[in-house]
Length: 252
Ligand code: PEP
Image 1 (cartoon, helix red, strand yellow):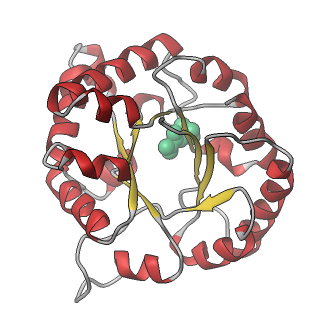
Image 2 (spheres, rainbow, N blue to C red):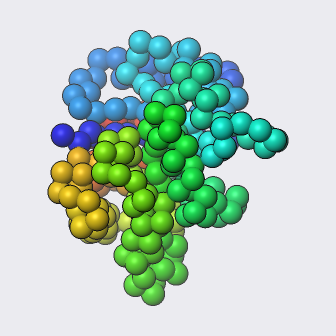
């Protein structure tokens, strides 16, 4: 059975004190929630991962990384490897966020390498993808999403998919306050499941969690999450406030 997931991407926000404070608030606010088959995830910046992991111990909160380098080690100044993340207790890595694709030139081919490195290291990935505004306007959004999945993930064996979580994030809805309508999200998620079924089988398609990301807030979370193929959300701005993030968790 696929899992429900609410994941907060903190991006380049929160210093060490703010990280500890937010984890403490979320520990408290999630303590009494019954989270059956539901995961709560936060992704602080690399430098605060250890502090966050320490503060989240024995709580309902999982701490994951926002990115990772594809190489095992070597002369890659400023980069972080899977082994390094594993050594501090990270089990999951977000890959392919649109900000990584846009500002850091991450291509589908590079992301396929990163996915391979994640799996070789027995980690899990939350793999992000989604179309630009011009793709949607030109009604190219299904083709763009299909090619992102094909190029980034469809080289994998079916058995690898238990370590993959998908996050469909239309770029035009990220940090813009503009959200895909619940119907648009459902339509795309159903399409994603259909192409996975075609490439693999129904079992893989039915069991992969597909999160929606793009201006999810307490006010719209419940409606988006009510759609049958939406298994949760990847949350940016609203994940930085304990109250808002908790309300979104409750919405699921
Ligand atoms: C994101 O960055 O993944 C995201 C969805 O951001 P926001 O919720 O702020 O749109």
